[in-house]
Image (tube, rainbow, N blue to C red; front, side, top):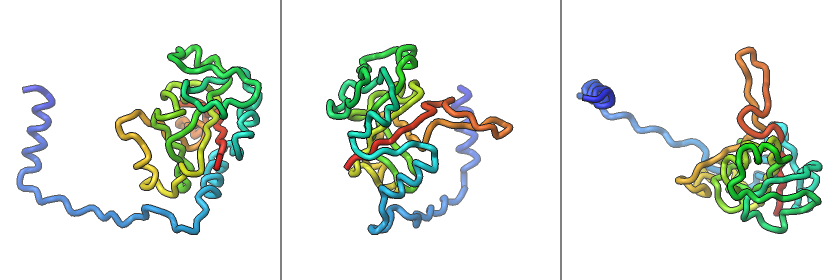
Length: 196
């Protein structure tokens, strides 16, 4: 008998004669009231998380902050490629090549206003995970129709079989002494461009 089979057998024996699990209450809120301005709430959360927020596609050059070389998914819309930067399409860029660009510009699958979370699922204009995690500066375009109030409203927009990246501000973590360190698990700078 393998260790796995032995563990599963012990679990089955431990559960013999146990009563059924009680039903889980699902009374939590699944959406915001219609009068809530989800765009304003998302902006509030993003700013609280130290992300920079810009309005309109014309703000992309400002959001890129003078970046010279910008990695982009191969299917990034042409109208998003604004400014004087060199846009380098990711067609299998190595980690070293991704680390050598000044920024990355992508779209997203959804955004959640309540948590200030931007969600990517490797869909159109999003690229692969490495593209959005290796460069130190991520500029992400969020369309108004992608913003949802609660997580329960945003989840159906995602491809459940694709690798996902959920972003709530620039990457940050704290060590055992509670010293905040940015950029350990992804970009240390996040700029969000909101478009209607």
